[in-house]
Image 1 (cartoon, one colour):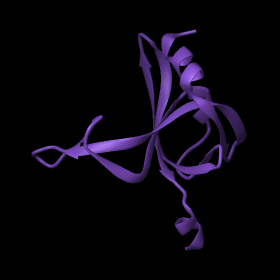
Image 2: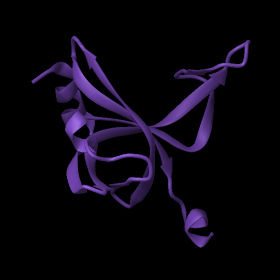
Image 3: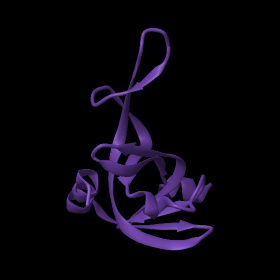
Image 4: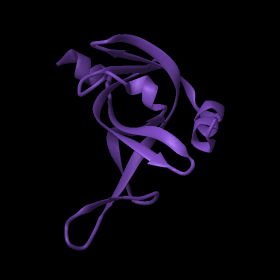
Length: 111
């Protein structure tokens, strides 16, 4: 097992992914996304800066989001998220997927 997979399994929480290919369960790390504006107008991901409301980053194994796409639903405890985009990464510490999620709130359900 590679280092990134071990880290996700140790600090990650149980999630369920609902997509067109069915339900999948596994572990993932979900954290708020923070951005700051660069001088020339581009966006850069950073640990400091302004939190984007309802925007979260998820790190998980590739298999967990395999077959899912825009609009797939991710459940973690009582929280529910919609998948916006995902990217697969391969490095010397292992393979993983980074996804951008939007949290679904009661306000969204009322609309």
